[in-house]
Amino acid sequence: MTMKRWMSGFRGAFLMILVWMIVWCLGFGGIVEAFIDPEGQIIDVWPTFLAIPGFIGGGVFSALLLIAGRSRGFDEIAATHFAIWGVVTGIVLGLLTIPAEIGDVSPGALRMTGILTGLSFVAALASAFFFRVVARWQTPATGH
Image (cartoon, rainbow, N blue to C red; front, side, top):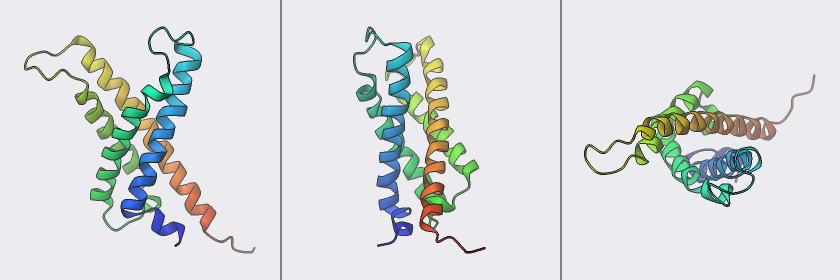
């Protein structure tokens, strides 16, 4: 099985979810754990906590790319499309943080949506970079 098949369809979606979980767990979780909350006063283990939005965001992002990209592999989709769908994913994650009661919109909901949108944008660009690097690695080098 070639790597090309792994970068499209449901296999690609599974790989994308793994990439998002790694970016959210180790990337964002590691930054928060090291610089923002090193004492663990807010949350004890940030990487574990951020695995949840990484998993959900990776699933939403993969679904958007599968719908929009249709027959193309993830390495064939433009980086701008990755960025756009990353922003949409961040908005979806932000909306999921809003309380379910009608009329109960906390002042922090908009801020949380903005933060999640920014983080999802970064995760989307990291995903685009990952799939491009893997595709380039799989492409045989031509002799000059």
